[in-house]
Length: 394
Ligand code: PLP
Image 1 (cartoon, rainbow, N blue to C red):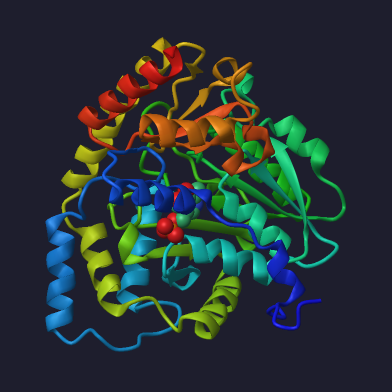
Image 2 (cartoon, rainbow, N blue to C red; image 1 turned 180 degrees about the vertical axis):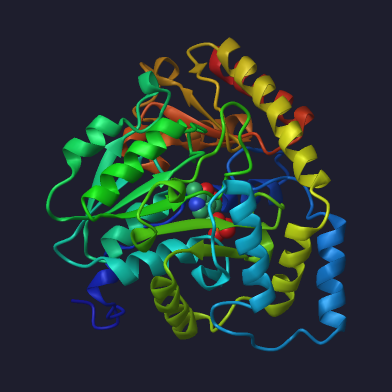
C-alpha cells in the first residue's frame, strides 16, 4: 500500500457526483483553447436574476444583513415561503415546517442522512438526478432504482413502484417535473404514490424544484394527499428565479423533521446567506412577470429543440412537459459508430463543439439517450442543432 495515499473513510468511495460539472469544465477548457462550444449540458436558466431581487439583496447588504441568522432560516423568509407554497400548491403549510437551505441540494443530503442507514431501501427514479443515488449509497442504504421508460412518457409506473416496495423500504423519491426527461406525473399518479407511501408508513421525498416550469398538464404536490409527518418536499429559488449562484432552496416537512434538518444545517453551514434570504422574500412577494416570461420562453424553445431533434438522423425525442430538458433517444445514431452514449457525448463536444450529457450521467437506464438543456438562446439552440446535424451526417 502506498504510505502516502490519503486515508479516506470508506464512505467516500460510495459518493457519486454530477457529471454536468465535469463536462462543463472540459467545455471551458476547449473554449480557453479558442474553440466555440454551445452549452446544452448545465441545468441552469440562461436568464439573469430579475432586477428587483438583485436590488433587494443590495439593499440588504447596505442595511447590514451580513450576519449569521437562525439555522432554520430567517422567520420572514420562512413565512414568505410557507405563504407562497400554501397559496400555489393548495395545501396549508406553517412556517415552522420550512427550513431555508443553501440550495435545493442540501434537502437531499440532510433529508437522507437524517432518515436512512444500512438495512434500509430507498426507491428512486432512474434515470434521475444523480445526487439521489449518490446520497442513498453514501448513507449506506440500498439504492433501488425504478425505471422511467420512454413508452410511458418517462413517468413513474405506479404499479411497478408498488411491486418494488419491501418491508425494508424507508423512502420513495419522486421528482416531477423531472430532470433529465422533462416528464410530469399526472395528478392521479401523484395521488396514488402519496396514498401508497402513507398507507405503508414509508417516507415520501418529493423534489419539486421545477414545479413552476410546467407547459402541459399541471404540477401537483403529493403533500395534498400524503402523510405530512412522513413527507419532505424540496423546492427552491435556483431554477424558478434564475438564482443558481445564490444558493437558496428549502425543505418542507413536519415541524419535528424541520428541527432535525435545521440541526444538520447548524453542523454544516450554520445558516444560508442572510442577504440572499432577504432577496428571496422579494422574489416571492414581488412581481412574477420575469418568471412568467422565462417560462413562456422555455416553452417556445422546447418546441424548437424537440422539432429540430426529431429531424436529425437516428434521433427521436418525445415532447417534454416540464423543466427545461429534452431527453433524446439516440440509440440509432450510436449503433455501429459508438460503443456507448458516453462516447457520442464526448465526440459531440470534441468534434462538433456541442456540450450535452449522456443519459447514463443520470443512471444506467439512460443508456441510448442524450440530455440537452434548452435553457439557452434560440440562436444557440439552432446552432447546436445545425452542428449536430452535420456531425451525424458525416
Ligand atoms: N433537484 C433537481 C432535480 C435538480 O435538477 C437540481 C439542480 O439541478 C437540484 C435538485 C438542486 O438545486 P440547487 O441548485 O438549488 O441545489
